[in-house]
Amino acid sequence: MKIIYIHQYFFTPEEGGAIRSYHLAKGMVDAGIDVEMVTAHDAGNYDIKVIEGIKVHYLPVAYDNSYGFFRRAVSFVKFVLAAKRVIKKLPRPDYLYITSTPLTTGIIGRWAKRKFAVPFVFEVRDLWPEAPVQMGVVKNKILTKFLYRLERLIYSDATHLVALSPGIFQSIRETCPAKPISLIPNFSDPEFFDPAVNDSANETKQLANDQPIISYIGAIGPVNGLEAFVALAQAAKVRGLAYQFVLMGKGVGLAEIERQKELLGLDNLYLKPFDDKYAVRQLLANTDFVYLSFRPYPVLTTSSPNKFFDAIAMGKPIILNFKGWIHDIVVDAKLGVYHDSVDISPVFDYIQQVKENPKSIAGICERGRRLACNQYSKRRAIEALLRIFKEKKGKRKKANAAYIRIA
Image 1: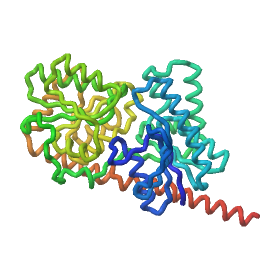
Image 2 (image 1 turned 60 degrees about the vertical axis):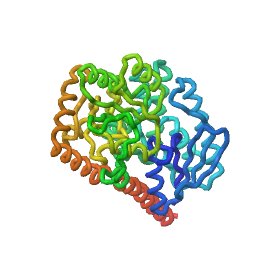
Image 3 (image 1 turned 90 degrees about the vertical axis):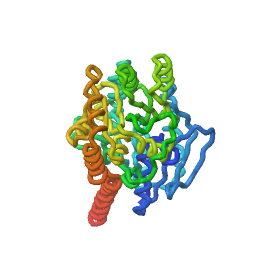
Image 4 (image 1 turned 135 degrees about the vertical axis):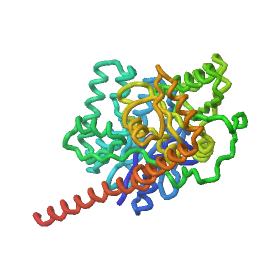
């Protein structure tokens, strides 16, 4: 089987960031599938690399999350056009596997289906255009109507849809009731993110080993709501609590956090540059509590944050400031606490209780690891994706056999 995988923001573990597509593509390759990845990079030239059996086509389309709406839209359109030109030159695949965001990647699937009769599976990572509409990024009524129509058309044309959370699954079901959908959330890599790995050397020399460390790792953008993290650090300082807050990431919101740190004199807030998965594992090894953050928009409760799955694999307690399915997992499995912006006392009480109770820490670690290994492992996600293609292939064989008999 040959699959062309479309992901505008493809990253490898060495680059850091969200590497779901790397793991899924690698899983396909290991299963004997020929995978060609079509992605973009900031370099001014087209490039091809073979990365662990994945043939990656890098298209010269620049993008950064600091871009404004118009510049982002231009980047999305450029990627669609460049991807079409590359696909025309490649051997015809059995399927396209296309992941959002942006939603515009689905246009490539609709085009390939009509031009080459190639079916596509569409992976929905975030609800677009619902997210930008709720957040007020898209306000024009005509544009909003167009984007919702494009969403329905892409879903309808896909041969199968993959949702990354129960909330996304339900939204797709309401939009396209008859379309087959699979739920494949983001996942843990429990072999790599393993608390037993001796990787706890503290490179942040300012940190004290005997004081609680609360870390946020990931994107620093408009949706992440990290003012709550800064406010928690400020509240700890005001109360005289010797807690240490570490933020590792990049994004358009970093400059404002740096400004707030300086303005408020937050010497308990440490900023680390975005780095690869080895640096992430090291920080998690040093961390006592992992902080997860989103702004309080209903659509963001459907999100599937990568760092939650890394954190439970490392057996770390969670502090999160949003509701939704991840919140419910944390509460039901007794893995952490909810950070209410109005009443922050329960967060500080929880930190103190956990730090003073080694049995509590061991229990959280055990329950988190169990979830990571048994329900949200990389292996299970890859197996679920491979089943989709196996079932599709079987149905196509039966259809071809029936056609031959009739002919």
